[in-house]
Amino acid sequence: MDTLFFRDTWAEINLDHVSENVMNFKTHIPDNVKMLAVVKANAYGHGYEQVAKAALDAGAHGLAVAFLDEALLLRKAGIHTPILVLGASRPEDAGTAAEHRVSLTVYTREWLEEASLHTRKRLNLHVKCDTGMGRIGVKDSQELLEITEVINAHEHFHFEGVFTHFATADELDETYADTQLETFRSMIGQLPHLPEYVHSSNSAATLRRKDALFNTVRVGISLYGLTPSREMQPHLPFELKEVLSLKTKLIHVKEMDEGEKVSYGATYETGNKEWIGTLPIGYADGWIRKLQGQEVLIGGRRAPIVGRICMDQCMVRLPGPVKTGEPVTLIGRQGDEHIPADELADKLDTINYEVTCMIAARVPRVYTRGGAVVEVSNHLL
Image (cartoon, rainbow, N blue to C red; front, side, top):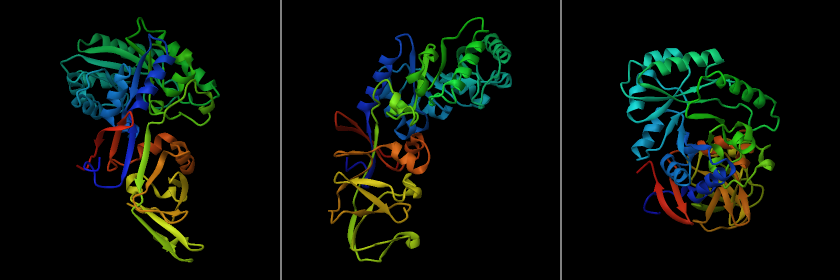
C-alpha cells in the first residue's frame, strides 16, 4: 500500500460491506424486483468502478448514474450490464449513448425530435414523470402518452422504462409520498402497455414502502451503509454496514506553552501546556473549515480539532505525548469508539450524502475484502 501513494491520508472502502448491503436489499425485496445500484458522483465518493463491480457481483441487476460521462467511464471499465442515466443528456449525444448501450432519461417531445437526427442505432429510453419533485419530468398522463407515442413511432427508439422520484420518502410522515405514488400509478395506468422497467423507489422507499417497489428499485445512499435520514434510523428493516472510513496519521507532535496560538487567525489559544498534533488533511481534501472542533480518534480516544483547518493540514489537541505515525480515524471505527458520517453531517448541518461526496479525488481510495487490501486507486499517479 505504501508504494501506491505517498501521503498519510486515505479513504478505506470495505467492499465486503457493499456486498452485504446489496444482498440484504435483495433479501428484503421480492425476487421479481430488479435492483439498480446508484453509483453516480464517483459512487457517492467511494469509487465508480470498484463499487459498481462489487454491487453487480453481489446481485444488483444494473447501475444508475447522473450523466452520460459517468456511464461511459463504467463501459470503459468493462462493465456490460444495463446502465441508466437518471439526469439530462444532450440530444446530440443520443448516438453515443446508443452505441454504448446506455439508457437515457427523456421528458420532452422536443428532445426526442432533436435526438432522432443523431442516432441510427437502438436507443433505450426511460420517461421521467414529475409527480411532485419539481425537477425534470412530464407532469400529467397526456404528456406521458404523447411522449411514449413519439418513442414508439421512431424505429431507433425503444420505450424501456418509466419512473418517478419521491421527494419525502425518507420522512416518517408518508402523506406527500402517498400523493406522489397515487399520481404515478394514475399516470402509468393510462399507458396501453408498461415497459420493461417501472421504478419509483430510492433507498428510503425501498426500505420502507413495499407498495412502491413496482418491478425495479434504485438503491443509492444505503448501498454505502448510510441511512437516508436520521428519523428513519430506528425503523430500518435490517442493519446497514457503513462502507467508508477516512484515515490519516499524526505527522508532527509538539508540546505548547500556555497562551500560544494555533493556525490561521490565531483563533485558538492554549489554556495550559498542551500537546498539539498535526494531521496531513485539510479543506482541499474535503475536510472543510467548518469541521473545526470536530473530534477524531487517536488510540481509541476522541481528540478535538483546534484552530482553523488549513488547505492541507489541521491540528488536534492530544491527551498527552503521542508518537508520530500514530493512526488517526476521522470517519469510522477505532477501538470501541465510532465516528459515523452522520456525526459529521450533524456538525455541518447537512446530510451524510454530502459528507462522503465531498472527499476529494486527491485522497487515495484503498479497497479491502476480508480485511486485506485488494486495490488502491490514486488519481494523482
